Image 1: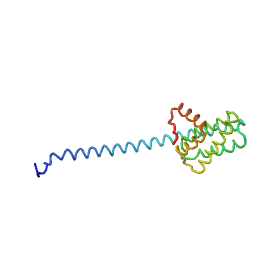
Image 2: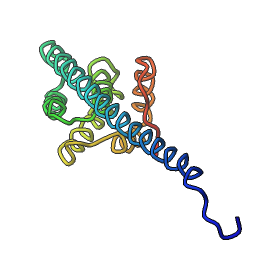
Image 3: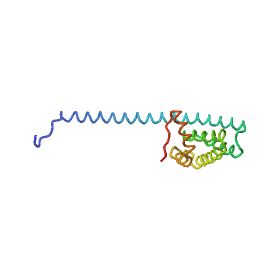
Image 4: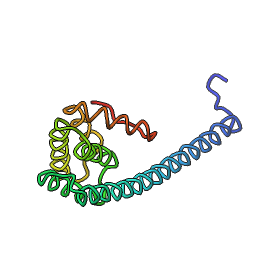
Length: 164
């Protein structure tokens, strides 16, 4: 055994195991890629649907005269920006929380909601595919809206972005 080669039979299991493990790794990778695309498509569909709800709520509030001229202009553009393909799902609940504060809140909330809406609008102008990390920066600057947003997301059972 001191300088002898191992018999071919002893190495056969090693080759078979390596091939089997390699096949499992490739299969696992394919499943992960497939799951990613299915989740991505589902999130895109949910974003589109929530965007429709946001647009409908804006139209109802506008028709009911619930906005000042400035609020109407900012939210009108924000609605248009959120209707584009690729808008991050998390942008919509934050925009909807701001709109709710403007239409149902007191004077302090109305002033703050306009600032938040303008920041979201400016963010989507500058970066059309702004994501969760971009949203956390806005949330950090406006803790009241961040709390309302997080509560709404938790009630809906959705994941909530945390501060960086």
